[in-house]
Length: 427
Image 1 (cartoon, rainbow, N blue to C red):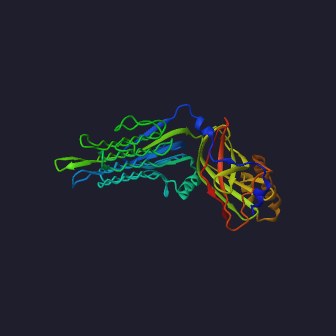
Image 2 (cartoon, one colour):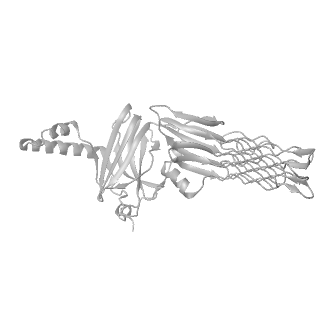
Image 3 (tube, rainbow, N blue to C red):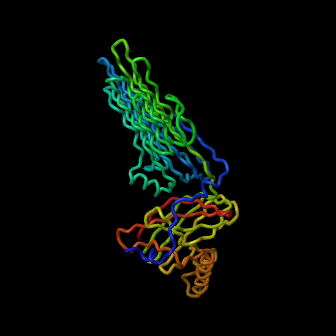
């Protein structure tokens, strides 16, 4: 049985994210990371809406070191993962996966949003020196992983696998296997075919056997395999699998080649007008209490408190006017909103008058003053909050039912950005 809040609503859910975020900035700035551990920094006082693109390193092609007329398999291409997400001020760790050398797997690449929250793309597997194919890198598309990304505020999630390398061949036509291509935003990388590399599958294809396609969202080609007269070629960057080698005899041995290094790209879509510090939601059964804190507000108009039963589909249940509407404010601002079972909403937080009255609340003669102050702050609070009588109740009635809250900030121009998603905690 659904909770009573969800039974009240007839409003259709809206999907996480907003296309307006993609259109809000006329020109996006992209940072390209190609080497090992690095840091991406969001300046103090800002929050950035970004696209993060991650490619794993390509696997190395196989090399046969003994025997005659034996071929190695091509390496697999690196995987691809992409999300849109809001990053709060601070430093974020980036690890770019290295290329697999001949006979070795490519390394995974990752962007760490928070402890336990990594946007990851796996590296491709190596080709064997015994004619066996190298497997393409698997993108982190396990349901639990991508659900975790969504609960962390990520939208536009894309995960694709790298292409498989090809087996080497020692029959009628002899060659090492072609390397698999890296994945891209357009789909999985293509597999190697014969000794020919697989092509990238992004917003275009790579240029040539050894040259990976450059540019946002595009992976790289794998490398060609060797034959009796031609050396194998390396995988392109980012993430192409290396071509497999071929050994005729001890005097004529062509080694398998390395895959291409991985890559991490961060594109700033929008510098957000509000920096959220924390969001929390608790319920005692009939009331929902939502607390959130901003560290800065710039041209902000109001906040929509949004609820979901699955952490993906959200509906607005209350609207709170910004305390600094239309202004630029740097500093901590707290909001506390109570929503009851009837859909009534009150902005909590004692006014200066109520705080003064509290000091005298113990004396009988001051109780009327105290009650007047409290009534005043409640009325002021209710005036600052718009109640949605058709709002969705997110208070779970069943013990195992979960509910989630996020805050949508709406600026004076009507653009929306979002806080992280938090689970409602029962008191």
